[in-house]
Image (cartoon, rainbow, N blue to C red; front, side, top):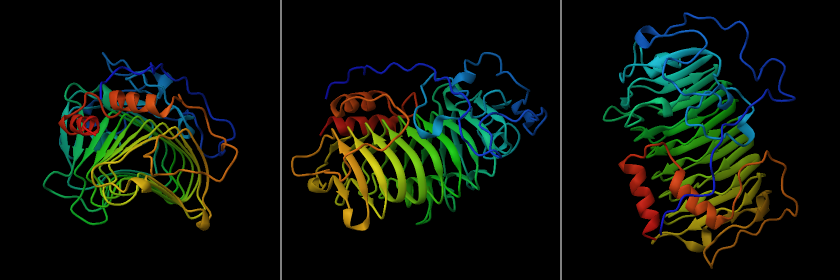
Length: 377
């Protein structure tokens, strides 16, 4: 398949304060944010980004300039907050990523590039207004991994009602040594979260799970790969945008929606659900399934590209999906569910755009191989 640039040219999204948000959970940075929070040799400073940074507060501090679209994006993230610069690839200590995300109201950039090998879960727990700007890192970018150590639980988690978090251009690799670990997990009531141009692969259980009362989340232009269960969305999730993502080499849950409402799934590419199913929607979930492209691999059950369990209460609006000839994605809703607009294209155009642009940039050898795998089908 020949790669050509898509028509999508990203402009910086101007994200204002959300209307109608909870009064005790502001969409703007608190005016009481102060300087001097722990940053160690990472070099904390108040207000502006460090010298040489190109981040824009209009995109939540995302220096790549990507437009942030969907349910999660009514947030400034950490824009305008305290600058914390990652100067060490160590797991913990002054100047590390763990140190920089240990407090709220932070804009995190990187003065180093390479691999961060974790001994325990990297967690954002009960915090708000943080941007992690992986695009600011020098080559080869930032990869977070468990390496040979193994991590109990998720490699990276956002939990305990954390809010207003933007994560861009990070890779999460080879998550855990347990059967219950995910590469990335968002759960426990967290909200107003954006993952943009990230890559998650080889979770022991899930690749990128979103569960347990989470709401107002966007996952966009990302790669979720090579996990048996690539993505579970379940247990009371509401208002989730999944757009322009590549799901590849996951035998199931690409994604699976269960007890999830108002999910807007647009222009994703789902490839090689080996031996099981592609996307499954069930247990009272409500979703839009619009202009997604499904490409079976050699061991995929092509007819199970999309499974909609109407008998368990699933309600789906389906339109414009590219499917194997033996598959069906017939929905049971005649009207599309309301959702914030995203840059929308046909399924064929989305296939080209996602294979050209998705994932943390610059792509590493793993993500490059996934694109080659799709091209070979």
